[in-house]
Amino acid sequence: MSEPLDQRRTPYLDALDDYADRIPARLHVPGHKGGPGADPGLMGAIGERALAMDVPALTHGIDVGVNPTPFEEAQLLAAQAWGAKRAWFLVNGASQGNLAAGLALAHHGDEVVVQRNAHSSTIDSLVLSGMRPTFVAPEIDPELGIAHCLSPEALEAALEATPEAVAAWAISPTYFGAAADVRSLAEVAHRRGVALVVDEAWGAHMAFHEDLPEHALSAGADLVISSTHKIVGSLTQSAMLHLGHGAGLIGEDTVDRAVTLTESTSPNSLLFASLDAARRQAAVHGRELLEYTMAALAEARAQIRAIDGLDVLDERLAGRPGVFGYDPLRLAVDVRGIAASGYQLAALLREIDDINLELYGQNVIVAVFGMGERRLSEARRLVDALREAVDRVGPDPGGEHASFAAPPPWGELAMTPREAYLGAQEVLPAEQAIGRIAAESLATYPPGIPNVLPGERLTAETLAYIRGTLELGGSIRGASDRLLRTVRVVIES
Image 1 (spheres, helix red, strand yellow):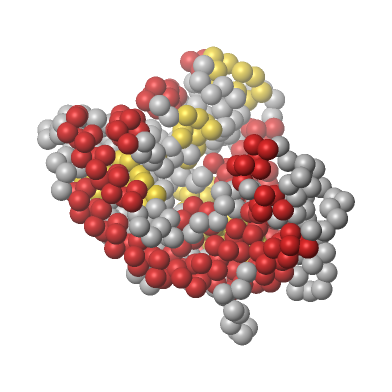
Image 2 (tube, one colour):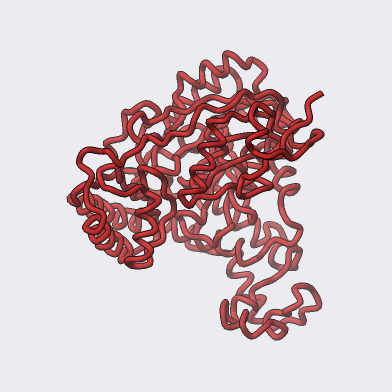
């Protein structure tokens, strides 16, 4: 174990500061030249200092020069803060982490077990890598109609059916806050000699407080995708990829090559700097900030539960199938007891007090809180707006307005996502596409989990579900026709 590093330092951020302070001759990109060439509107929006610190890659004293460079030091600090063997800074979001993970796994084989409610970027990685997935269904909540996590028993069965799999790919925590039994999932995978990859996009903060669910690296995961901006508070689009200290089931060099392949050759220095700074705040002050935030949200949950017709998702979920623990940084509200759907309630909250939610569905709305929020005035605003909204729409004690609204079963996987995505295709009216193999992903937002994958056969039930989501105010990612009038399908011989 290496000596503990000084987590109070921000070497990369400091190096950018030094560069800006020197007022160097900027005979390099970007064209705004540190500010003087910028549009006044941009200068007013992000400030002169941010432009001065917008420095390109391969700048001496920042990410090239004497080793370890400030950039290398920043990543070493991140690895130690999260308990990783190695950490990579990402500028294309956790989506880049999923893409890199798929490409790295493809070095070890061509079959992988994947939790079916994976983020659409995981499916994109299958398209890029060409890996052949065996999909395993998560546990579906019979009351709320939402997908939870993967059970160890389901993973065991999927690996039994896929003896050539080189990895298992799981999600924890979910959009709604359910955390998986990652330690047991890792044990199941490792008994068969396969790596466990965990998309922990929503759980970067869980390493910094003992009352939160165990984070994936400490539970034995081999590769962890971490969307640092979501809760920990780096800039949007910044994320990290962490390699575990396991048995070397995923090669460090292959991950490094995959990160390079999926990264822009012009990464934004401000995104990297925000990761360096967010890591410091999490490592030095994370426990204290989380302690305060969790207490404030516990109070907000109690106030929401007191509103007639509303309930909240909380630690009571733990123990249900597919739920080993619960992440309290998500404030998820069960709206089945009021005379409005989650879609309608979200619109009403915007009207009442400009309340903008992370996610809303038929039965549940989700508000996300950051680790570094101190006063949490937004929680009070949400509670007050919910009271007014329920006063307007009224309770629905009979539950007549509530709807299960679970997506229909996924279609048959007839070919790999890559084969379908790159194969001969045609565009058909949606009603004529039923029974055909999809050549594109159809993922309703929220929550961005594909209802249809490239390579799956389209069903009438799924297309009707997606169209209903659009009518309620949702959207589709991956579709060439965002209104679903047409669908791109494979031309079958």
